[in-house]
Length: 69
Image 1 (cartoon, rainbow, N blue to C red):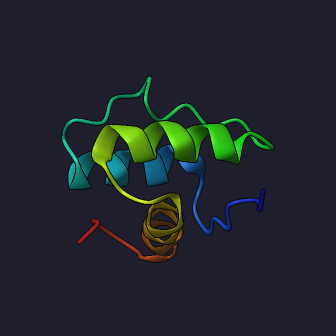
Image 2 (image 1 turned 120 degrees about the horizontal axis):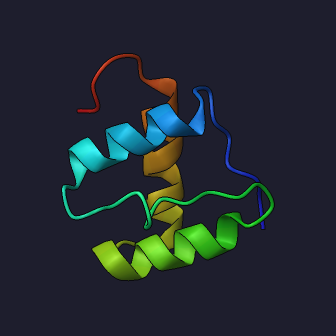
């Protein structure tokens, strides 16, 4: 398990992820520090993306200013 590298607060990252994928809900995006693997596994299953790709997406969104693209 590696901690997610976030440059923005999780609440901002969460909102950007919901912009990218409208099927994601606040319940899907509950983040607890130290339980990154649980979050990634859940999201991976829901949106059919590998955990490595998902980690990259989350970290990329966190480091981009403004709206997610």
